[in-house]
Length: 241
Image (tube, rainbow, N blue to C red; front, top):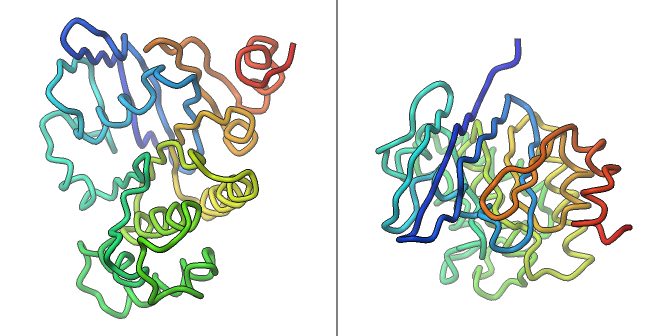
């Protein structure tokens, strides 16, 4: 039986009179890579922030459960202890700390120094570019390298669910391909991922299942590979007639 990791039911988010999310529902099961695609402003990032409790003052309704427990009212910093980690849009690395220090921050909920050292070495094998620059200040890295660091830092917490918000944003095509290669590698290691992404083609190629969000509504869902061949997805997001 498949274990449900995340369930979002009838989520609505309103900023004053503006409804950013309008009754969205989605779920992510253990071991899945699920992607939420849509145009800029569709409500994708707002959905992730509602899950993590990091929205500014606004009206939120609906139900969000993680590992069977309601998330409503929980502080965002408690979620890391519950093995839920998010890589935010814009990466958010500690620019005046080294790569190694950033990774240590990702493991702040653990006091097992031996395990932390092993984890750092493990993720250095997945992100060899970071190992080469371990003592370098994070603020001096390229955008793609910072994205790798943000992902590795989140993975240091041993998440049961990893949320990725627009990991390809602002990166060169070569670096975008590299980031998605890493996402596929992480998924293959059994880590459950919810990926919010504008690059619909790469996101659906990497994912098991997909959701399409338009103007705050989930308008389509299904097997990711099948969605790649759906004429509506092709026309709206893949630039194909």
